[in-house]
Structures are given as structure tokens and as C-alpha cells.
Length: 142
Image (cartoon, rainbow, N blue to C red; front, side, top):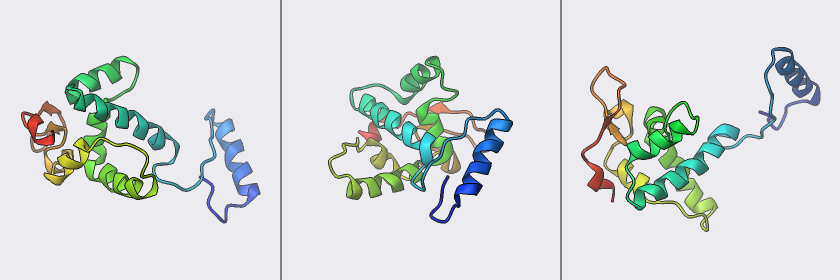
């Protein structure tokens, strides 16, 4: 990540170091989520539209895993904290009013279902266990 005061020599050194340890370095400016999370945000936007069309979070997550992701988007959102994405969406509504988002995730957060840390998100969680259990509260987000 290149900050406002990152010098060219420091950036060049970091890029060389990454190459030396067999990593692919990518330069990013300061923004929400950097590169990977910005890409995932768009996948999640589309996954939320799939829920509007009747898919279940577990169905979407299974399809995503089949396509090569290590974890489904809804499980990942529960792990990171649904309130984090909610805060970003609230800013996006102001910054990019023409970009369409499903309101399902906002409604989920309005009920306090922030993910593993609250024991409930897209999935339900038992205390001390990270296993995602399909939630029976599907209708509360519609």
C-alpha cells in the first residue's frame, strides 16, 4: 500500500523484497479493503442479489467453494463481521448513489446479526464453536 508520504525508494525495496520471497506484489492506494476486499465486495453484491431471487446463503456459499474459493462469501462475511460491510455500504450509498446494492444485508445487521462475534449472522453459531449452522431466520431479512 502506497501512502501519501511513501518514497519511491521504499516502494521499490518492498517490490524487490516480494519478488525475492516469491510473492507477487501489487501497489495499492489507501482505500476501503484494498485490492482483494474490493474485488470480494463485488462478488458479495451479486450474491446478495441471488438471495433476493430466492437462493439461500448456504447454496451460494457451496457454489462459490466449488468455483475455487476457500470459503463461501456469507461465511466470510460472518467471520469478518457483517457490521464492517454495513459501515462500508453506508458510505457507498453516499459516495456512489447510482451503484445498486441489495438491502438484505442491511436488514440483517439491523437485527444485530453481525456474524460469529454475536453468535448469529447469515448463519447461526454456538458458543465456542465456529461451525456455521443454517439459520431458520431467513424470512427476517426479506
